[in-house]
Image 1: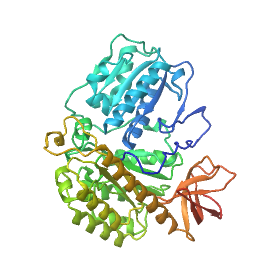
Image 2 (image 1 turned 180 degrees about the vertical axis):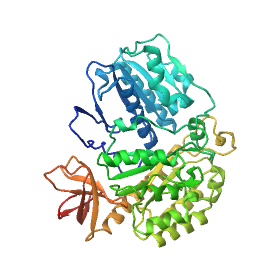
Image 3 (image 1 turned 60 degrees about the horizontal axis):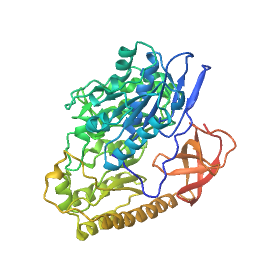
Image 4 (image 1 turned 45 degrees about the horizontal axis):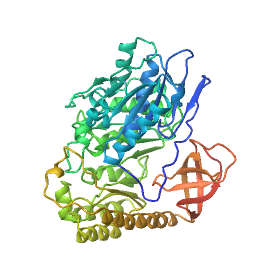
Length: 482
């Protein structure tokens, strides 16, 4: 799971595209994931606040569509909402703290709004949430996607009413395996929709809480993924981002991730298929073959490393050695020369001394990463590392090591972008930045800005790269956008 990218401020979600002549309201903000919704007048209203990963963003979009199907309007301002859904994250202690702060802020500003908390923190932090005054409903992972139905069954179409104690829908074990998402068609997400194909993880890394918050691995039916993707394409979207917890382990009725990509490539109008974060041991030769042949699969991989020390990797329960990771990346780069390559690096795992950090730094320096996500170790209750007899790393050392890696990440991004100077690349445009440049992404994950008076959102243009300024490749449009 991605945490924070060094030197980068998360860009606001782009304004979603409009299609048809329906009465539409733009519900874009930094947490809803760019929901676009038809608004029937006189209906109860729901707002969404989403923290965490792409999977949460995808699920919030699906929940919004499902609420619409039972008669709700979806609005971007909680002040005008009868119900606020807070989709939480629990990947680190810091993430949980952000969830609590957001809940308190919403309660303070909107004391009469019905507050429903779901997501990973609702799964592992249910006892703490029970004690927070003002929360009206808590839905753990097993019940997350049933939230619209649960609210509708209780209130039968009436605006939800505040409660003195929360309704709690929670079970410690997550056994849910259904993946049919029937309501996604009502919504547009951002320019590049997240398409959920898989959930849960069976790898059980010693530091990771995700198997507890999301359960064991299960995959969505291929035909259902194709249907959703076809809907996004019909609405004008050119790229989808395949999203899950452990994407490389996608399996459905004998078909794997490469089979899914082959099927997606047959959809007319879909220009790009992007894989989000994927475990290095699950990237098959068939995946690399499809990147190398220059089809619709983007030449981009985000491969979590976590550490470059074999001792630390072993304690983490990672499924590769330093040498194996190194050899895989070099082979992938040889097969896909224009590959955009990102990674996650954890700093301060218990027992990580100066020597182990130097091993990590040397490995990162030896590989052609274009950016790093650097984050500190976070002790999560119930994970295996809490039972290991390993010394904690001083916070001062964690901060110093993080700075070193973040500085390296900024240099690597600039070097990667600079290699494209003089080239003409296709850019899928998303949104205008604060400086007035229209920005978008190349297939191998270079963020590019151009001057344009027109609205380029959701369109593809050829851009000649002329320079790199403040972490952004800049250039000029060549010919017409399409």
